[in-house]
Image (cartoon, rainbow, N blue to C red):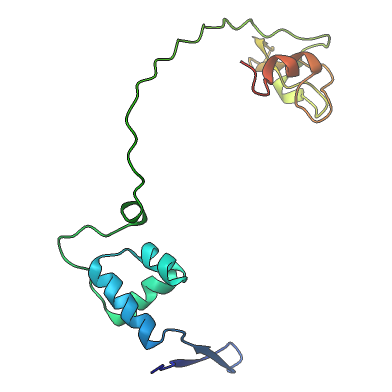
Length: 160
């Protein structure tokens, strides 16, 4: 026996907005059984092909309670893959690379506050008269914030 619940709300203009419930008796019984077994809303939603919010809302409206003293059955506990044996992998330490000071390419260094969109944004190891950092100032590479020299220095594309 399927009982459809119809809810009529009013919109901003006073017109009716009708919503039909899609929870039939079989779906409610399934929901009650899963909640009694301690399943989480996510597990129930996956099993019933509904959203977690729809399941949580129905649990609240039906005033269902999960069993006391039992941790909820979650997706992780419902589908546990077989445990693999732990193996120890020792990695050799990477050699430390000393970074060379960043020097200006072929352009004149530009003070931080005077940099334009076409200037290289490589921060140099020197300060301007105002005490702020200086940018390289060479013309930047298209699509990059740096000139070709600094682009090659800063961008690795997966290289070590």
